[in-house]
Amino acid sequence: MKKKASAHLHLRLPADLKRKAEKIIEQNGLDTSTAIRLYFTQIAAQGTIPLKFRTINGYTPEFEAELTRLANDKENIVSFDTSEEAIEHLMAL
Image (cartoon, rainbow, N blue to C red; front, side, top):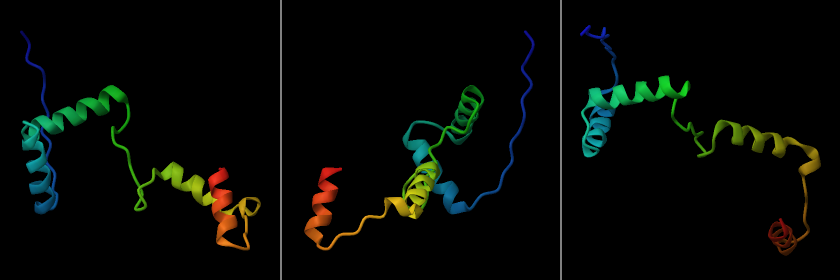
C-alpha cells in the first residue's frame, strides 16, 4: 500500500493565544494537530473558511454594511417630537 504524502506546517503566533486555544482544544478531547487537521479538512470540503466573521459590534460585515447604508440613506431618517412617538413607531415595525 502506497503511503500518502504529508506536509509540515510551521507558524508563529502569540504564546498566550496558543495556550488559550490549546486549553479549549483539549477540553474537546483533541490535540492541536488533530484540531488543525479538522479545520483544514473543513476548508477543503466547504471551499471556504468555516468561520462566521464578526465586526467589533458583533455583526457580520455584510449586515453592518447594510446597517451603515440604511443609516446614511436620507429616505430612512424619521424624526419624532416625543419619545412616546418614537416608541410607538418602533413598536409598529
